[in-house]
Image (cartoon, rainbow, N blue to C red; front, side, top):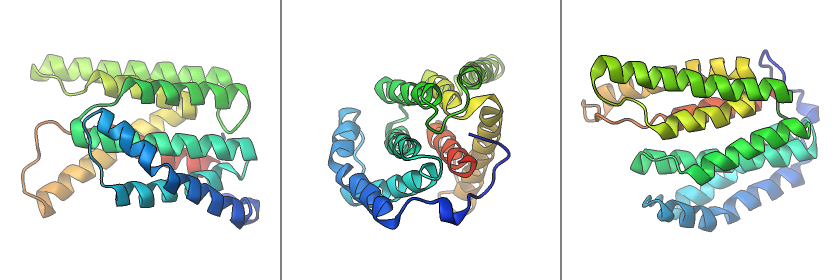
Length: 218
C-alpha cells in the first residue's frame, strides 16, 4: 500500500464479471450480516444490508483487485467487516471484539502475504500508533471532562485499522475520521433535531476513513 493517495489506472481494474461476482457475494452476505447484527442487538433493515453489502463488496474488490486477485478478495472482506461494524456501532454504540479481531487478522495477513497491505513492520507500527493515540485521547478526555468520551471498542478498532493502513495511514485516518465526525455533528445541528446526543459512535467515521484510505492507496 503506497502513499500519497492516487487514483489507479482504470485499465488496472479487474474484469467486469469479477466485480459483478463480488457484488453478488456482498448481496448474498446480507443474511449472515443480519444475524451478526442481531447477535449484538442491532437491527439494520435487510434492504440496506443487501444494497450496502453489494456496493462495498464490489468497490472493495475493484480497487483492491488493481494490485492482485488476493488483494481484491482481502479488501472485499475488510469492506464487509467495516460495513457491519459501522452499522452495529451506530445502532448500539458497540464494536464487537470478534469483528475487531477479524480486522486485525486480515491486516496482519495482508501484510505478511503481500496482498495489498503495508509492509509488516509498518503495519505493526500503525497498529501500535492507533492504540496509543486513541488510548491517550480517551484518557485525556476523561481527565478533563470527568466522563468517558471514547469506548474501549474505539481504541481496539483503531489498533486493528492501523494494521491495515500502516503508521502514516493511521495518522491520516484519525485526522479524516475526526473531520468526518465534526461534519456529522454540524449536519445534525443544521438539518437534524438541532441537538447532538451525548454519546456519539466514532466507529463509523474511523471505518469510512480507513476504507477510503485503502481504496485510494491501492
